[in-house]
Image (cartoon, rainbow, N blue to C red):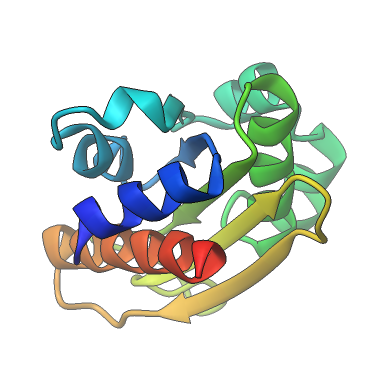
Length: 155
C-alpha cells in the first residue's frame, strides 16, 4: 500500500483524514502516522472496540447496535458519519468486523464492514469477506482495504 501517495493526495486535495476503527484497533491510524509529516493531513483516530465506545465517541445509536449488531454496514455507516461529525476531518473511514477466532453462522470470522464518509457526499458502505486465515491476516487485510478506500476517495 502506497501510504505516502495517499497522504500526498490528501494534501493536494486539502483534506484531513480521521479513522474510526474497531477490529483493527488503530492499525489504519498507525499506518498513516508512521509516515513523517502525516500530521498535516491526519486529524485523529478513534479506536472504538466496544459498543459503549462506539456510542459515546461516535454517536452510534443503541437501536442500530441492537437491530443490526456491531458488525454491520449500518454500524459502519454511523461510525464513519460520527467520526466526520466529531472531528475536523473531511474524509473518514470506519472498520468493524470479526477478526477471529470465532464468529457465527450469520456473522462468520473474517467478515469486515467498512464505511467511508466525506464532507458533501453520501456515505458509502461495503462488506468484505476475508475468510478465516487467522486474526492477524484478517486485521492486516482490513487495514489495507481501508487504506485503499481512502486512496480511491482521493483519486
